[in-house]
Image 1 (cartoon, rainbow, N blue to C red):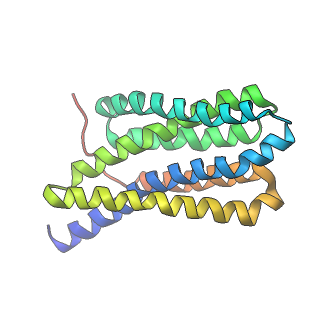
Image 2: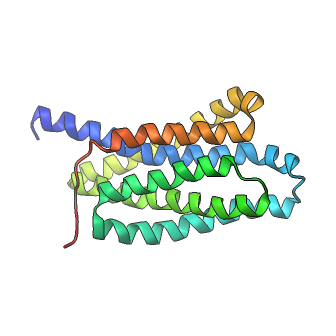
Length: 192
């Protein structure tokens, strides 16, 4: 791999690493804001737990759906769609007036999150070979820790001022920034 191609591949890797970061950031922020939502809407413990559970169910469904979609329309396009799904979903979620709508929207956000990681992992597997592939997949997983750190800092610094709705808007805006970056990656695979 020549120097220019290696630099381009490294830049692409960093962009794809945002999939792990945004997934972790969203999951982390959800855990931090749930106590605020719980108090504001006077939820039962079961209702609060259901929000986390519905996110996980959405992630499972998203993994299957978006994994299949990536084989049809390409990895890049699918990564953009998953990012839009949970970024726009979080914007809508910030405006949710009550528990049941919050629950439905959170399922959709979960689908976007669940679609991110398998497609991102496949993208990395497409651009690296041999032991480098394994190394880069493991390194990409470290972006998960970065996402949790970002979530904790956002919660600590902004939740008291912006509340849970403002935190969700910040998350959505960060996702839209990543969208700009992802438009610059190349497509790796489309099944005819």
